[in-house]
Image 1 (tube, rainbow, N blue to C red):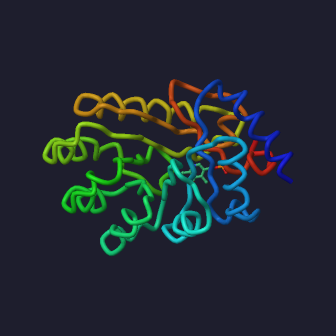
Image 2 (cartoon, rainbow, N blue to C red):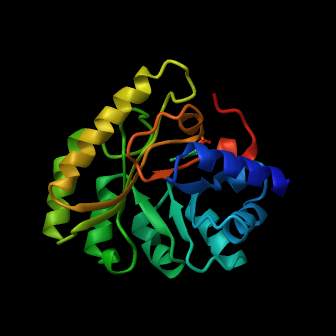
Length: 221
Ligand SMILES: *Cc1c(COP(=O)(O)O)cnc(C)c1O
């Protein structure tokens, strides 16, 4: 139901006060069909940024849609050592969340083709650099003369709850990570919020939000 999808996007945009939307279309757009959903979001609603879970999902979008100018972020299962060439070939941006992948990014000179996007673990404990790894990340950036981090991300564990103390804790850790990174690099974008975070308007000064569930009509709270 594209008209309902449009209403959902409008309502999220209104809440998110001018922050950009990175639409999560992973898992076949939560079962709604990632090809038609992404086509509509890009062409009709002018959303430019999309998130998928796997390289295969990203290639599927690039093969089936003309998404000229769109940015597609791949969040997990990078298999970066064996697949980095495909990321370049298909213009898919890896969300790097471990040191091995970051080293591959630098040692194969992927910085020439794809912007650097990093994800930190602030308490979700699923994916991401731990806060204690910030210094090592900075050291690598300096070594390889990386002056800009295009987007720094984190993901929330408990944003669906009305008790916002865990979200606040994660926001605080995220803020500290960003301050540290800024001593070495320019940071263009940041994002932490999923659907429940947007619904509950817990915003700080991040430039993007990343809704999934609420795009498709689920109540995330
Ligand atoms: C799935 C996902 C989202 C969206 O989460 P919802 O709760 O469905 O809004 C945001 N960010 C990341 C990293 C995700 O994996």
